[in-house]
Amino acid sequence: MNEVVPKRVYFTVWIVIVVLSVVNAALAFVRLGPFNSAVTMLIAVFNAFLIVWYVIGVRRYPPLMKVIVAIGFVWMGLMIHLTMADYLTRAWSTTTTRSVTIPAGKAPFEEPALGSATRVPTAAVPPYEPTALPQLPGMPGGQIGVPTIVPTGQIAAPPARGRTVRIELSASNASFDKDRIVVPTGSTVIVRFTNDDPVFHNFSVYRDAAGQRAIFVGQAIRGPGAMIVYRFRAPSKPGVYLFRCDIHPVAMRGSFVVK
Amino acid sequence: MPEDALSTPILRGEGGRVDEQFETVEQQQTTAVTGLWVFLGTEVMFFGGLFLAFLVYRLVYPQAFIEGTEHQNVLIGTINTIVITTSSLAMRLAVRAAQLGQRWRLRGFLVIAINLGVLFLVLKGVEYYQHYEESLIPGHAFKFPEPFAAQAQMYWILYFVATGLHGLHLLVGIGVLSVMFFFAMLDKFGPEYYTPVEVSANYWHFVDIVWTFLFPVLYLLRW
Ligand SMILES: [Cu+2]
Image: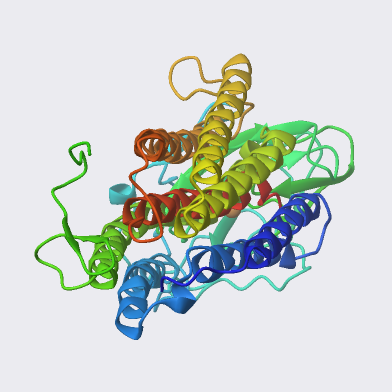
């Protein structure tokens, strides 16, 4: 490991790293779909490898020293692997939906003031109990424990006659269970939102598809099994608005139809 | 002949400086470099933990972290990447000069490496000042558009901890390289003995490697 290495080795590595770093910075502003982060990190790993292997010169180390060099990186890999194995699987669950018993004629939550949200502590969620779910206005009926399946694209809540409409919405595996919510113009909307993911989600409604002009922005909650109640006034103008999770605006979005 | 300031070496054979517990110069250098890598192993785990924390939060708050990243100055970040890579190259050329017994080149490359390290910290300071002006320092004065203020603050906490610790390592490196320069001025190094230069260079390259990851992770993950 004591040989004198030709200068051109070091200069070549320097040029490659500088060029790749500039390319990497430029690529951050070009949309490559899901590949942006992967390409960015691959270039970083490659640059780091060049420094370790050619500049520090680990390639000229005796075998035992190569092992010692590798140990630190292997342990870091183990640490990241085991930790992510935990974090990435926390959303995995044996039950599809956490259901809640609503006593007949009584809402299980305080109805919040307009434009506000009430946080329901997890402990307040009644335990699993197979009873019939009272028919909420506009909700397809169902048995507790049997997830109420709303086919994608189907109307989740057709216009109710009254001034108040209740919506059940849940999120799991970073997606909403509905991609279309229909409410009457000017109605008071109460959204009971359940988050079954171990990450934060919220529910917001916007006038425009870009999510710039908010009608209502809900507080984010973290699951699994967390619930929050949002209450706001639907626009008085009929039309198709946007609802989404602000934390995952690309994956979690749908049409908020007012008519 | 002046008293040796580094250690009390026993001069053997071809004039190499070998401490008494070693048989050869090669064994002595291999031991020193191995010891450095044991230390660097703990550093890999140390910075690895930070990157892991960032990865977890990046997955939990993707949108907030993207919006936090959008406040970064990619131009200064790229320039700093080139500065630290060049500093790393200069330090490696300093080792090569020591191997070849080129005294003045050794001193010159050490000066270049040290000054580029200082330049990196100055540019980092410029960035910190921009963050301060934009109220992005976590704490009471932190300002960020809702609904991501709290989540984005987590990005900025991780950013300041990671770049702060990296800057601290750079500062230590500048100190080590300055000591090497001092000894180089006293002609302590030559083809037969340059282990301290080699070990400091490897530490300096490691600080460069950390930045090789910090730059893309903190500045470039925008999608
Ligand atoms: Cu979400």
